[in-house]
Image 1: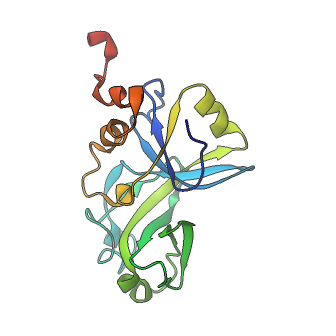
Image 2 (image 1 turned 120 degrees about the horizontal axis):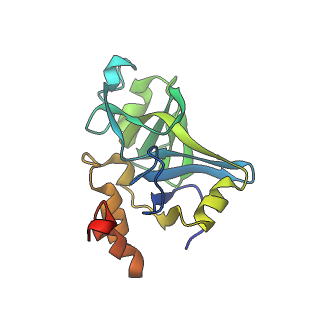
Length: 185
């Protein structure tokens, strides 16, 4: 199992039953000694981006809705973006892992639009205090796996949990085929 670092994915294990995170895939955006922060990639909301952030709907990846990034700070928004060219870093972009980063939503959208290959906006985030995430990983609540470039920007995220597990080596891939209620198997 990999160590959690920015850019990695947390995939909820079958043992994780918290409704905020059951069958979720979380992109880690910041991990240090004080804790970790990430966004849930597979929880689209029904709220159109343009209903909340004027001008941003034209540059976000489809579907152009806000995603529920997690239970913390749901009244705030984080924008995760992918640069087209790592040498063309626009104003308001902060790298998380190579071309993947965060965009300042106060930056003028017209200065960013041509530089981004993908953008998704999340309401809220998932957060863990110092050593809390390590404890949850140790108890078997999360798998820590590498992400792929387009994971945060997929149009259809309904099977993201299964797809991420399926591409993992060994026994972890088997979990992608488990029924919702293993007792019925």
